[in-house]
Image (cartoon, rainbow, N blue to C red; front, side, top):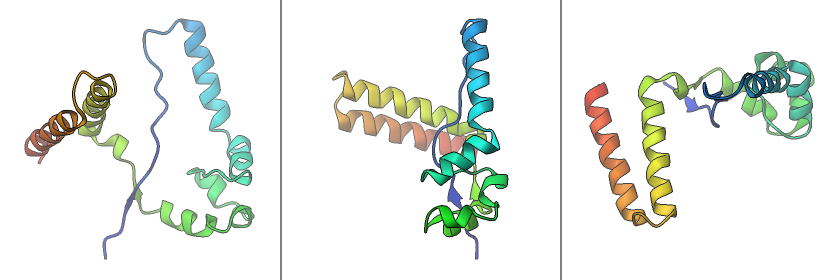
Length: 126
């Protein structure tokens, strides 16, 4: 049996056009957020952490009833953010959704454009 699921959420993105001060603050935030202590507190409050040191902690399964199943699923999740075409697909989707939300296109037109882009991308990457 082949089993996998997608890791949810979006990654931290630090843009290159920020000032040095903003970049430093962003990096400092990432370091704080991704620290084991912060992630443990987040998990204790009901959030989920994909940090192995957190979800394998002895008391992790006691934080919430679903934590045991969540922790077991992490070993077979795939991180699509490391699939090169995924970024392009996401950008296209977000741009088209924005056009639909702002009335530049209908929802159907935006979805049709997204579908065509995805079809084209799947033909060029397989």
